Image 1 (spheres, rainbow, N blue to C red):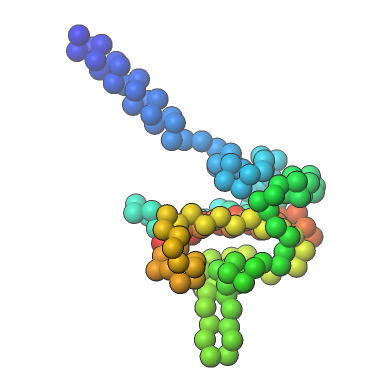
Image 2: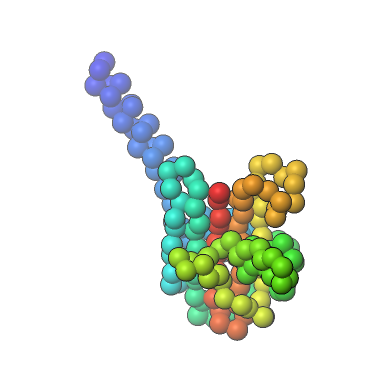
Amino acid sequence: MKKIIIAVMSVLIFTLTACGTGNEKDKISEEIGIDISDGSIVYDNDTHSGNGDGTKCVIFEFDDDEVLGKIEDNENWSKLPFDETVETLVYGISNGNESVGPYLTDEDGNSVIPKIEDGYYFFKDRQADKDKEILDRYSFNFTVAVYDNDNNKMYFCELDT
């Protein structure tokens, strides 16, 4: 009887553990609503810690512009330029007296997403409490992806604070 219980528990643990794993491209594809499986990961950095806070940034390169057609057909993607909120989160803004952002930065405080003129972006606010405007909150939980038409690159970032 003990052996049966141990065997059943082992199978359950293995099954539950397997459910938590998966291909990173598949997870990102699901998040942004388009299949990016034919992209090559050229940069991947994740600073999330045990408490869930951190930043994840992944850069994909594509051999052709096939993914562009998928983006153009998806209503959750918008043509650049960013709206003011996303612009602030990604690049920061400054009006002479004050500056806000950027929030997606490398170790030196520079935006991880370069200035892109021709492309599309996806933005998802993952904050549970959406009573306040994004920039007026004490914490951020969002996903942004930007596709650069000129270089066939996609920048995917998540910020959780």
